[in-house]
Image 1 (spheres, protein in one colour):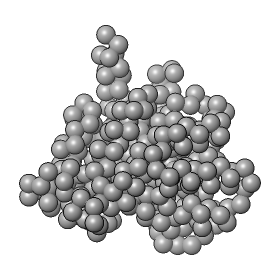
Image 2 (tube, protein in one colour):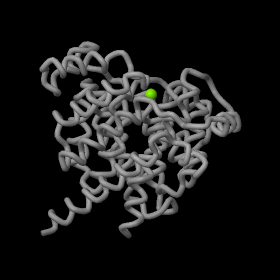
Image 3 (tube, protein in one colour):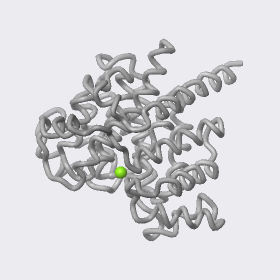
Length: 316
Ligand SMILES: [Mg+2]
């Protein structure tokens, strides 16, 4: 793939997370919302302020760049420090407790197991996964391992870890596409299904195929979900991307239109769509209003430079 196209995909996945998250943030807990209503609200906002999804995605990118790859302890402290600086970003109930345990010396890979009887299966480790999805896009077995380990920092339940793995894989497959016209939705879902290790996700992927083959949007919320559980939101984001593979705008608006956990489902949809279509697919009117846009772009560029360096070292 041409280098500049791949760089654009790294940028698209990270900025796409931020734009999806901040656009979806005003609609959390709503039911179905009309697309033009969402666009109107977006137009009225002066700044697109992101939430914990993007805040943690930033922490993940910072750590990958600093450590030149995945280092669990460094990533955990990256999340902890960012949370301490801006605790008002809409974090769920468990992360602040987990971060306090880590600060008090509990190991990064043990703290999260103390919550929700063996760990959370919320979507918090999938929502932030874009940097791992693009950085490891051409090494899927390493991507699985790293996505899983990164999830353990806050979401230790197998279904939480698998959600992060599946979302990272969807971002990687989207990164690998030369263009949206190269997308074969059946093949994309078949690859994800082979990659998924849990039947809960395999069944959801089969349902996505059915809904795409016989479009019926009323099935999306009922059967794929729009909740905070990873298995009730990652498949919905994958559906939204596959339903509108040629348009970042339509994919993200569709994700928000289903209501529920809109910031996270739109953040995950934006990550996959941005990885497929690149940074230029994200409307300038949204990109320009995204809070800390330049910093997020700087992180994406540094992550891409690191990817190139690592690749060159591997080829020697
Ligand atoms: Mg959020």
